[in-house]
Length: 119
Image (tube, rainbow, N blue to C red; front, top):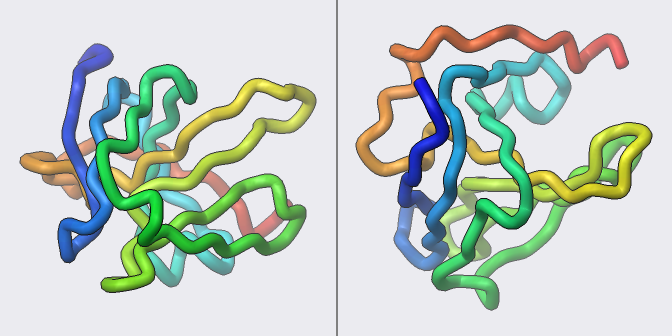
């Protein structure tokens, strides 16, 4: 796979975005949040993400070290993306919940597991 453009958003459609991302390197995580949500994540830079609608419908949840801004729709409760900064960097990234991309079947991807529970 290579970087491709996708559309995505929350369940109710209030939040919609376009993103350029490579789905060849998706990740599942067992941290206290990701495991409960069943997230399959793909990461991209902030400049490859465009929120099309729904900024006013987003609310934020911070936990653990507070460096990832988990944004979810106030209407349907779905977290379709998050924003943050990686360790030792000030460059923003966007974590895309691949489950929320139109026309993508995340269970068919070869996701790498990340042990978030241990950090």
